[in-house]
Image (cartoon, rainbow, N blue to C red; front, side, top):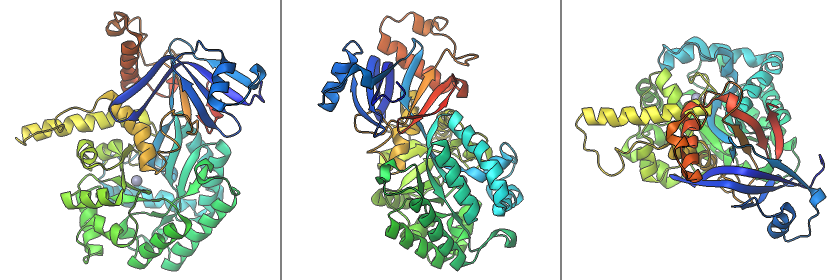
Length: 476
Ligand SMILES: [Zn+2]
């Protein structure tokens, strides 16, 4: 059976292709073509024989022997993999430390010092495997990673991710201005080594279609103040030439915004700096965006630039409360980021809870300040909406919404099997949750089970992790 052409999952299947709309197949079926790693079809009922289902989905004759079936247990469900739109692989080296400092002090005391140590490739070789495994255990099937400024350590990071089977964007960090002497590079080094990194990563993966490539290089100016105008302009050109995504930080904290303004006095706003250098677009991920003016949000919307909402890091570094409802109302793509090590955890489930807390705190502070709350501004984000941010919302921010984020036919099978009854599960049983055990409608019951998953679950509940149809992590 290991060589079966197709895989079939039967049981509860949950996703959310549209923000606010949960799609629950209580006893559904989902088929995968193992040769492409793509979903070939879904059915509302698992009662139809597997062979018939695959013949309907593929339009070909299929033998029972070609199908490997996995039946999910009563308290398990299948969902799209989590997408972390912003994290820093080297910063796992000081996870959970320094959260009493504001951004600029935290960068100087911990971040630059620890990242600079990755000039030693041996450290990268020893360290990155554990960090990536930790991210995968937390159910992240696709992540946008920052590396460091060092070419060799970044290559090791990219190889480690590919060997682990995770999907990722990996960025060589660029820092040719306003950076410490021990952790900076010349403009020429920054540009040349970025291009070299692109060639190495793309060259190592043959000519597969861009959406099935596991590791894609991403253009990564650390943040505008750490780059010269020449460097930013050249990075914009590289993104265009190689058709690559871009990531950076934007409007995280007031002193950082002031720093950016001083570095680029000719630009009318922080957002304008990136825009002017050709770095915004529908494949650009801007992290944080806590303190954005109305004009800046218009630029984000008009360019199709996505926002990585990093609520855990925004709380721990005291950066502020980013307003997801405001971004969504503008039509700006929004996903979630863990922002390790500004954030203390690689868990997207924790980021989901922090997104809820941020939203509640914003509503409360607006009410306290007597602000007029109209429209949907005062409606708390629901569990289903937060679930969307962690999956389909993230796929849109990464420019991959056509291929990832939900469990539709034609998409890549990046998915999780969730077990709410796992050993030592923090989620109580459905029987002991009276709000659920009194329900007769199984769809309603699963809606509440999903809410419990969003607010209570952790990596103990993430039973299996699949990327492109391949099992990359399993608890059994
Ligand atoms: Zn960051």
